[in-house]
Image (cartoon, rainbow, N blue to C red; front, side):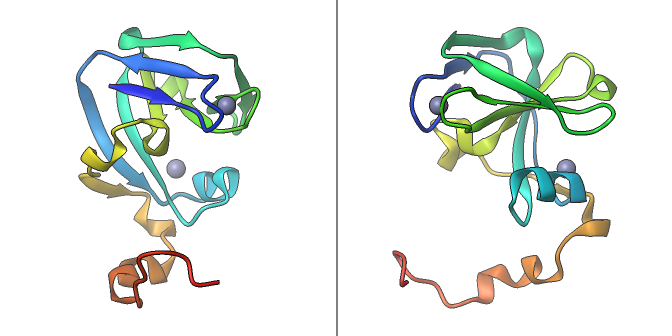
Length: 129
Ligand SMILES: [Zn+2]
Ligand SMILES: [Zn+2]
């Protein structure tokens, strides 16, 4: 699995098998990413190789940290000591993301209600504004 940031300075690979692909609906992810929910690909830390670029990390909660491209801000992964040995990669940072399909939704207790109806909204091939 190969990944990169939006400015392409960060390039990484992950060679170990994928542990899980999830949509997280928790309030922390919503706030720190500015999005309705966040999709993640969970992998073993040992298989992750940063091939180029510089990552900056910020502490986003007592336990969790978020690492992003120091140049363009693209989030690359989260880490949490409660999930020791794992990197929680941002699905959008992975270059073949269209092939990766979340299998579960987590923290649905804080899920925005409209998310369930997203497929029923009018759809356009490109932007309309
Ligand atoms: Zn970048
Ligand atoms: Zn979350």
